[in-house]
Image (cartoon, one colour):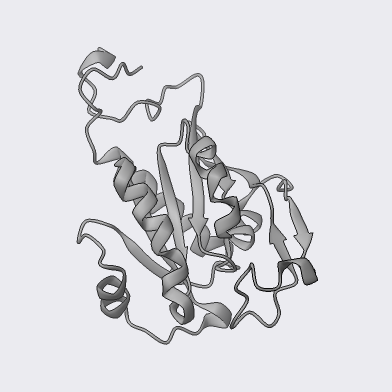
Length: 204
């Protein structure tokens, strides 16, 4: 096979012998379910860097509407999932609070795409994540986290509120369920495979 003629993005070339490894970011605002998603789909015990919220975060972290939120990610979450024998995905969950956004520029290095989680009760907290990936031309899908299986907005309403491009996949579901997270990752992989490799990018 002449890999130079492949239409697949760099890093998504698969072969019969060695699995391809793909880095994907799980992003979104504070408290939207990023740590939960990584934990639900990871086939290994996820690495978490959570700390308990304390009085020091009062007035810094916006926890309105998050009465049950007692911890926060201060660095990253990490997990792994084998999509199929030729494709292994490494997941990096980004911190959601604005004071940790400086880490995103490092975490995005080598990432082929992202899953942006949103909470319909607090859509505004995920605007920054969407802007981040759009401005860098990084493909992403949007997952509407239906907490406890309930969503108070339709897909069309969410798309309009987030001003999403029609080509951005959007899925709705409770990310505590493994199949919901897996569907989000598969949607992102399909999106990546549908895009040609940038000109001048070596593949294979």
